[in-house]
Image (cartoon, rainbow, N blue to C red; front, side):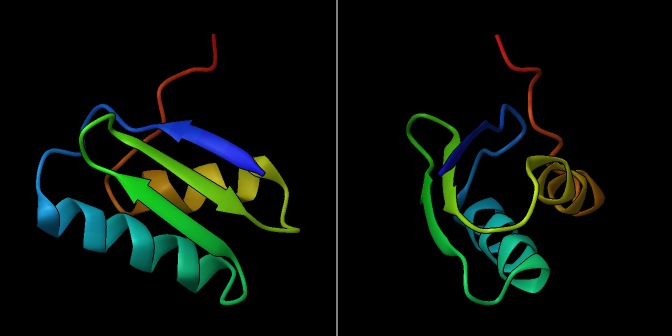
Length: 66
């Protein structure tokens, strides 16, 4: 399970775009997006970098991990 901080996510449209980008990268992924905390949790077998790239390409680059 991966957790991404998405500071550029600010509305319901953003949630839909993030979900779509992740599902396009891995159709079988479990995706939970929380607008209030601006995070996405993804259960996927793909590497984290692949999912990060999909988010960045959609316009929602994840914040660097702390």
